[in-house]
Image 1 (tube, rainbow, N blue to C red):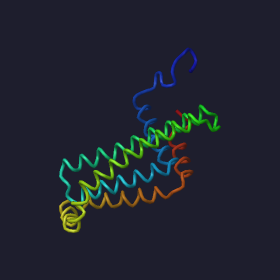
Image 2: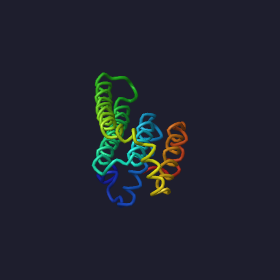
Image 3: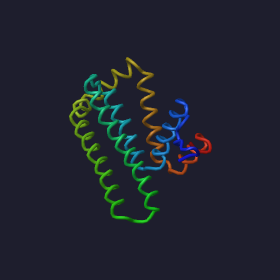
Image 4: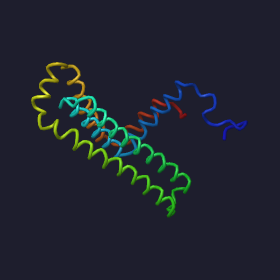
Length: 176
């Protein structure tokens, strides 16, 4: 607790709260290899859905699956950080069980995403060459931005976490 019994976020502005949340996303992306893989896979799924001409309903299913995996990975990352802090970095069977259970949640979310991807994206991928060309003709800027984003995320997924941590520390200042 902070002085006078106030919580750490007492008096935090809304803008600062959003900045902290974005910093948390960036920290998780930089510190967790699996988060980078999930973000990259999600970007590819969105691109395939767009370029494959998936309708609104299918796109919403893909988005739900992708965001569910991201949320599960963020919750897993947060739980791991708190568990490590609470255990002082020492092994404890309950910490191990908690971490395994959280990882199991990510596995379930990822399995759901694969099933949605197979159901929604496989039919779109079969017709992808024609649909992708139609998408690029009708919205070349959007298609180009998606491809550039996919390449950037793939490159970011391959960057060492220390580069992301340095950038996040500089961006966030001296902490929350």
